[in-house]
Image (cartoon, rainbow, N blue to C red; front, side, top):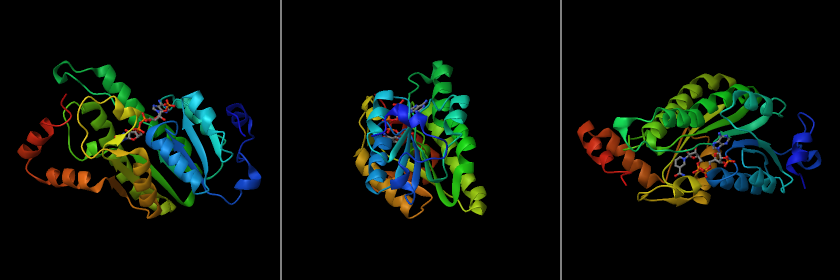
Length: 263
Ligand SMILES: NC(=O)c1ccc[n+]([C@@H]2O[C@H](COP(=O)([O-])OP(=O)(O)OC[C@H]3O[C@@H](n4cnc5c(N)ncnc54)[C@H](OP(=O)(O)O)[C@@H]3O)[C@@H](O)[C@H]2O)c1
């Protein structure tokens, strides 16, 4: 069994258990300690992958390293120095899923909370830049990069100015990276979930239509990544409704969006 301390003591570029792992594929996953990330971690482990699991919660990370195919990294992704140091001695990676994120709503748009806005943009977008800086050089040719956005970037919702702006940024970032990484033989995917029951959405004070479990979300993601799809959005019934409404005149979707995510 690897303890969290053992993990930190591993020599650079060595997998957690070399005898088992030399021919396995390696995933680096942020936000592996909860919700969608935890489900993804379990699913990739069950498929025989090595998982480099990142998060901040030490108790959750200690549990993850009970699996010999997990290497845990404790890192606050909003701190550039921590990210650079934590990822400096990693082996080559077949797949990177940047999933960590948080959601806070702006309850009073007229009295806009700039600190809240900065917090959400830092966690959901700026941290991704730090990760890309450290991790892109480690992705093998033929490898994959996936950014977890949100269906909130398909259509603007009430109170979601900070969260939606961060996820719209992720959507643009993924689209633009897909163009430039093609020549390096790295496929990029944008993952846009609808509502998924996790600690993040347990805080929501409104109805969440077509909400799915994190295991279902993980299935959709793994399936889309296996097919190397760019836009992995789910559940389809929900996201296709949003995509259709987004095509309608602005006045209609303003009316629709004003009625969503209200307390
Ligand atoms: N749930 C949904 O309905 C839904 C819908 C659309 C998109 N998403 C997106 O899916 C992703 C995962 O969400 P979730 O619902 O699974 O949320 P969650 O259960 O709250 O998990 C969030 C994960 O992100 C990590 N994290 C947050 N801030 C971090 C930081 N500064 N440094 C390092 N790690 C950090 C957390 O790590 P620690 O707990 O260890 O700190 C945790 O592992 C997010 O990007 C979210 O925006 C979720």
